[in-house]
Image 1 (spheres, one colour):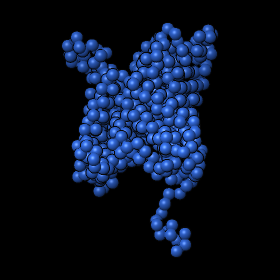
Image 2 (image 1 turned 60 degrees about the vertical axis):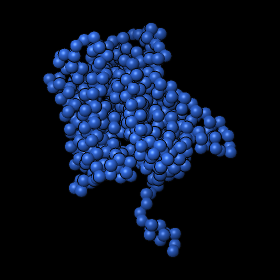
Image 3 (image 1 turned 30 degrees about the horizontal axis):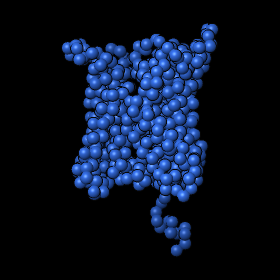
Image 4 (image 1 turned 90 degrees about the horizontal axis):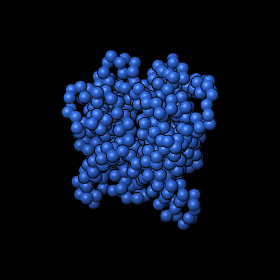
Amino acid sequence: MSTEAAAEAAGPRLRRTLTLTDLILYGIIVIQPVAPMSVFGVLSDRGRGHVVTAILIAMVAMLFTGMSYGRMARAYPSAGSAFTYVAQEVNPAVGYITGWSMVMDYMLNPLICTVWCAGQANQFAPGVPTWIWKIFFAVVFTLLNVRGIKTSARINTGMAIAMGAVVVAIFVAGARYIFGAPHDADYYTRPFYDPQTFSIGGLFGCTSIAVLTYIGFDGISTLSEEAENPRRNILLATVMTCLVIGILSAVEVYVAQLIWPASQPFPDVNTAYSYVAGRAWKPLFSIVGFTLMLANFGSGLGSQLGAARLLYGMGRSNALPRSFFGAVDSKHHVPRNNVFVVGAVALIGAFVLEIVAGYKTYSLSTDALTLETLKKILNGGEAYGLGAEMLNFGALIAFMGVNVAALLRYYVRSNEKRLGFLIPPAVGFVICLALWLNLSRPAIIVGSVWMAAGIAFGIWKTRGFREQLSFEIPPEE
């Protein structure tokens, strides 16, 4: 049998048609050109204005981690999963822990998108309480995903172009506002370093949240089987995507900090960038708000289905009860039970996180929990920041695991001891560890509880990890 006939008999296979440019554009679309805008207010509040520096530090960490992802994609070109990399190169039990941390990312992304969309919708319709909007978006995400509705690549590309146009409009309006009045030299350097508000703890705490700007870059590794020259292009595309998003994000927040100094509080930290854009040019308040709401709506919709797919993979491989989590709706061909589970987590979690995050703000340790105080908490908008940190809790664990896997495979076990295989994963691991340690105490506590529950489940399921646990992580949407 000829080679062509053998290939045809084996069935259709993916074609290697994606160029390096295609991969970079894919990464930028997945991360989104407006990535730092949704979390800008939270970053400014946590870092006391040093958002630009935090974005750049996070970029360095993601560049080194991106190199590790690209190199591991060479070894496992069809896996594209931190769980697989760590399980194969470090230890299956450690790989399971890494995989469980990724579950937190998948489950929390729909939650924080629900919180953000609710906050922005409240700005458009302040007569409707935020808590009602949370219910609305959680229900809409769930109903649309139950019906199997998917966003096409063309729509994603169109949204990316529209977002790019909004970014250009912000830069133009921002330049007119900034250069419309004289400023001293300190005005232009203050976003990088302000001696009156700078602190190491605040900067690293801000950077630990700024990692959210880059979440999704590792999705490029899932395209290994469709990329031309994947051993070269996956690595280059991952690093270039982090570099492009990092520079673009730094410019976006730099302009924002010049327009709205950190000394001036925001009316709402969750939708702070809309107020910044509105100060530069009034019509941009609504334009930016609507653009970001669309971006978060699409992200929440897609991430809920991705989380449902993850639970389906776990149920299908019997890591969770197969009869419930491994079931697929015969009409719409989606894991309906899992969509409802993720929707319930997003809805309940949006309120629980708001109460936890608002506890300190409203000093409930000394004040009585009155109905009025509870209403303030549920409309306070503190949940997004805590949810973002909890998401990064799991993401940073996965990033550290990939860096360790790359270090072991390409340096420790290699006969060729090159500094290029030692420095990137080592530096990436150290920076990610430092950022992980600087997450807020509530995020670390909740994340630790989640990890403890997962480890306990793994120990029970595998009798102390003596039996193999099938725990498959599907590629990101």
